[in-house]
Image 1 (cartoon, rainbow, N blue to C red):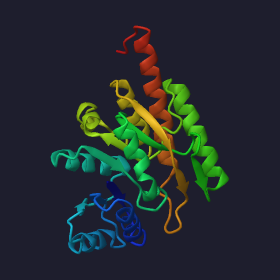
Image 2 (cartoon, one colour; image 1 turned 90 degrees about the vertical axis):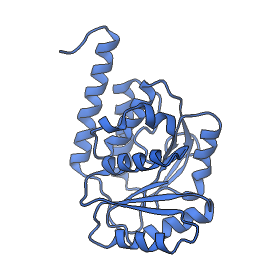
Image 3 (cartoon, one colour; image 1 turned 120 degrees about the horizontal axis):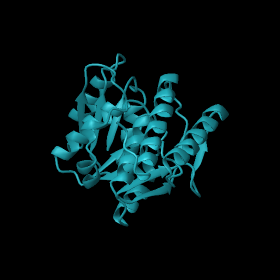
Image 4 (cartoon, rainbow, N blue to C red; image 1 turned 120 degrees about the vertical axis):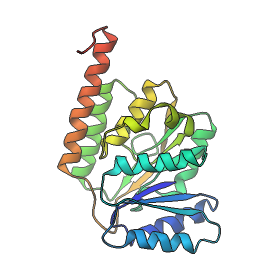
Length: 241
């Protein structure tokens, strides 16, 4: 499990506690971006008091974006030969109690399993109407621009088989915000891997503030448009100079 953090001191022990109550053997890497609220120090304390050595911490000097945190975490996991790497938010929006659904998808043969809010059985809890409309719009836009069938390509609760991350050249990924999720799913599809979705319940955070911003939305809009155009030109046999 890779859990990026920035000012999640109150949420982190809760989410790790729930995770280990659901799957006691799960290993966790907390990637902290220099949280001024002491999240990194708290993560160190949690790791030092875990008798089973399941909790690990990576400290980065400053806030460098969600994508960079996950790329660093993936590199760490691949170096240590983990077979499956899972993304999960620290704020409680992703239920550890539903992790088994993602792992069952991997065991059934999928290479990337996305915990989806928008397939049958998926749901949203306590999300403002504006956020819901923005999320649904972003997913519809991405599906049309990229020509994919994934209904929740922006979702951040997902499990990757290590073979995917070894092949798609994560070192070249330059998406920093939530566009990162679209980027990696798109690369996975383009590389010929199998992607599936399983329903999850997404619950709005109860503690702290969302990291979503206008810059994050703008990055996603323009990058997705660029990827879609490039793909269509290549299918038509036209190479951009």
